Image 1 (cartoon, rainbow, N blue to C red):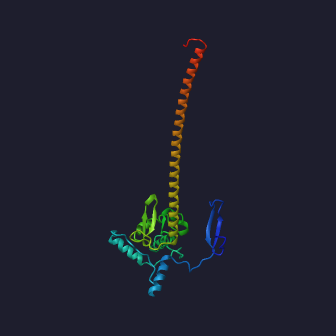
Image 2 (spheres, rainbow, N blue to C red):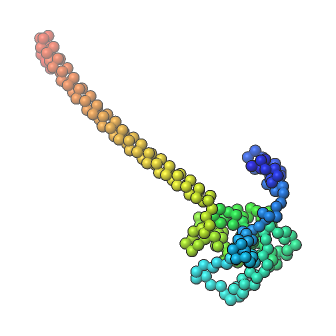
Image 3 (tube, one colour):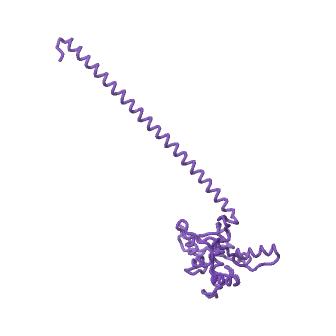
Length: 253
């Protein structure tokens, strides 16, 4: 895709034969019209409906039964009153410990999750982009400082952060991406194929067991016939020997 769009992208560095080289994907041009976060786009949509553009801000959605102390509620209120800092804005001059830097940090994390298909992402994966997003090594602490915006799950032993506003009370995505429908259909097809494979494997195993049982039964029958034939042959030999002894005029033993 990159060679087909040289006006948008370019590779910097050496990718290597197995993508293990030192290469980066870089924009060749910047379009300010596209540099709008999900929060800013939501404010634009509301302005189209009501005619007045609200101030872009985060949606705080605390779970049922979750209680914040008075000091924490006041801190969240004052923090939300601060101007929104776009994750695409140049914030090089912000002090790392300032409330504005915290606002910018939450904006970046919110935007990253908004760009994902399921509005969630493993925290270690986000950590791989600390340099690109200008995140501190302790960026994951922001998830616990803002429980009304993010939810952290430890399911499967993987620390995953989820965007709260993207899910309803039943844990379902409010705005489902079309890619999720394709993914679910693909998984359903794979499951159906796997079930058919297991059923065919079970049928073949049953047939193999029946063939083995029949072979064992036939083998036992053949052995019995051989033993009976040996016994008849022995009796005939004894009769023949007795007649031969009488014809020779010898007394049988």
